[in-house]
Length: 397
Ligand code: SAH
Image (cartoon, rainbow, N blue to C red; front, side):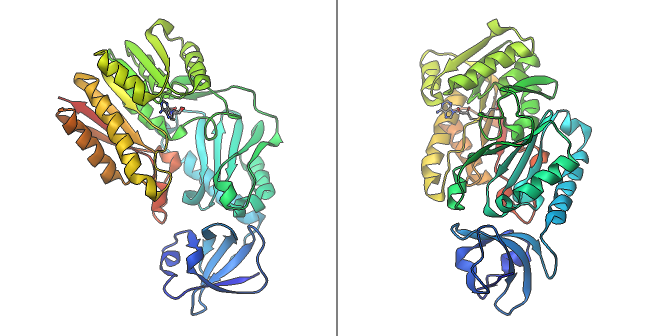
């Protein structure tokens, strides 16, 4: 095994079990050039062992750590053990937090498996291999999943841009068992959703918003709801099922809205009370404002606006704009559930942007609840980057 020595002072984060070592932290190597994803031993500049990690020769994140300290082996048994531990953690969630058959089983770095996401959708598992290390161990990982979480089939959705930085091609297809059908039905907090695991966003559904859909639905009874960035209906369907009198879903994607409509019917909800608007939220909300439309509950769940640190200010303007419009569309006593899923957007800056939007909209706003990703998307304390989804549930006076 090749040994990688870190530069002086670059062992701090590793000693705190942060899993990433950047290319700038690497001083020299002893042994042959490691192959893509190969396990390397990491030592600090004094030669003390720091642990074992996976080598990514083309990525800025040059090493992703598998384990820390001296000794240890990275083999099939290591992956089986990490996967088993992640499954135990999911089973330990209180029943109220997992009233669903769709759950994130493995959350990458936060579960000690950098680059690996595994989501369960009913009888199928859907995986993403986002880094060279997990790609190299794919066969062992799939075998362990089959053994520890029997299912009808395991499907890969590694059609990810980040793979390019890792020197990997996009990949998609069956890894084991049966191919999932075009629509897999899942259950979540009493609602049913059809999910396109083969072509939908991410692995098919925004599982991270599960608890927040429930939190918003709890306020929906008797209210008229605007579900902006609706995707396949998530928040709006939960709200309508909880008694919302009308729901307007807005999204750019026609296939997503078609599934939102089908999901409305799937839940036995009145389609006459659901409106599906295909369009750009920035424009549609302006039109609603100009037409003096108003709502009692507005959900803003945009895609990731911040792709890199350089995009932060442009993204801030985007968040400000939609939140300003969201506040303007609310009736007195109305509620806004507003989200940012950009890991690069700090929670305090997001709150400041929403506060600025409230001021500009001339609304007095109370913060009822701070929201985050559901606990199956747990964040490791050693890896704060794992917290990416934040939301504010607000009420206007
Ligand atoms: N709230 C959803 C997830 C939203 S994901 C749920 O609970 O499942 C973000 C969605 O925003 C995607 O469906 C994407 O198609 C849509 N989108 C992105 N930019 C948009 C824009 N400018 N206008 C309207 N929809 C947009």
